[in-house]
Length: 320
View 1 (tube, helix red, strand yellow):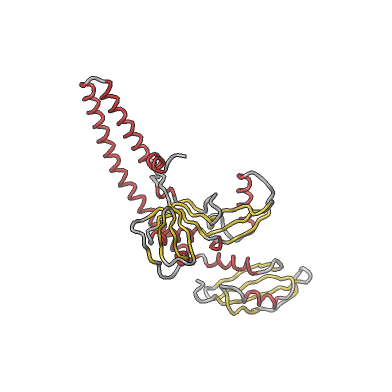
View 2: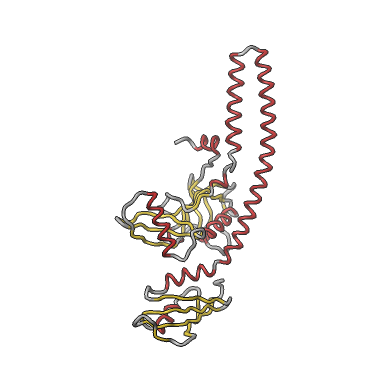
């Protein structure tokens, strides 16, 4: 493994410190290669913590496992490539999320079983922006005790997207080697001509570097506009949160046929094996819905021992 300084010079890969979250921390503090921050920095709202950093720091963020949606999946032993494909397929089939809405990682917990950690991509981008406001530049987003694969990799935003500086570094190195060789092995007259040629190349490289810096500034501006757009878009994910809430809350004996949403109220239609009246008590435990009630007649379902139901509930204040 090459030293970080060599990796940065050749490939533009920056060195990152580790950012962890502690329930006892009151401020953002730095100790060697580890930065500690309070849990409140993970919250979308609230007062930012005290920041003791003197300069911005590039960090690899270690999320607590409790910050993610956790799923245990039973899978047979297989290669890593096939395992990643199997987890992605199971996530698409058994969760209400689209593949472009979430990011995930996993760890093996026992033979034939893995534990998956799911995090919303919009929340990851919002967390990145919130950390940048506290002088913490995110390189990678990882889950506690699960470093590979990372949840999200922001490295491409920290390095040159076109590899221009790597080309400049190699070119300047080659020019420097050429100058030394010319000064040692070639006559003085040849050295002068070579130096003049090298100076011309350096001048052209400097012009190219200035032009590329302007282009990179424009690219960074476009990336900031994209991040702002995604931040606005993340506020529209109420229905996705509702589907996740119902998926977690409702028992397996419930089949939902439709969900109607009018801005203040949600009407859930479907059938349940057992009593529809008892299902109202289950919906009452929701963190998003309040005042659930049967809004239509209960009838016998086509499947034996089932009842068709229609439950109306009001959206909890602050859930939108």
